[in-house]
Length: 265
Image 1 (cartoon, rainbow, N blue to C red):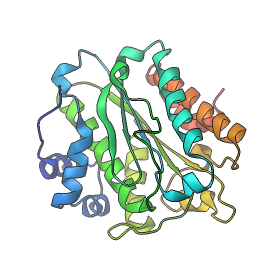
Image 2 (image 1 turned 45 degrees about the horizontal axis):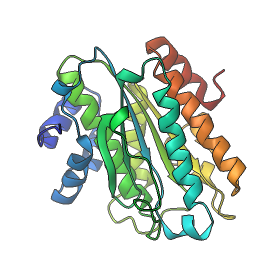
Image 3 (image 1 turned 135 degrees about the horizontal axis):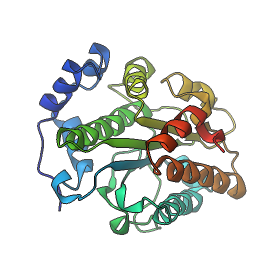
């Protein structure tokens, strides 16, 4: 079952009053009809339909720009996403995990739902041929994570989140957001110590992905920069999936993973 539409302005307003979101973040998350609809589309299952005493939200945003296909990475990204799902299904705390995947250009593959209801990526539902509105869609992704977190917390359920942003190029086409507007949201989320924000930049031969993701506030320890080869991309997804599984094992494991990044043993 999907959750009913929620009042996002009221929800983010409450987060602002509680000190979880700064004025800058609130401004960046100001909801217009289009952004609000995109966030609502990802919220998925209602908290009342999740019989768990704690919840881990694992969220992925694979790039669906044309350069993914031209670079020969379409199947690698499909396999990597599916590999993460399989790793999570083997986790001890798998019943506490909800997953959500939306593509970089806004298509929602599936809203938040249980692992056994997740949809694998294949050639029918993933055909990368669009642009790279990176910052606009990062704001939507983070807004969705924040909204879902607040939904559960309002019902008294503790939440931890692990999110992955994946691209093979720098921003092209964002009209609302920039690193300057995204960074306060990222910093606010990391300060709460219940969110892990990770990023993967697949080499395109020119983009400095460390800088791209540093500029929006993601720590170096949570940035992966694989080369453009099947082995390197597969290894990067494996690294992320291992971190996501560790983070799902409990608050202590999550804290260690958050502090250690991809290097956590």
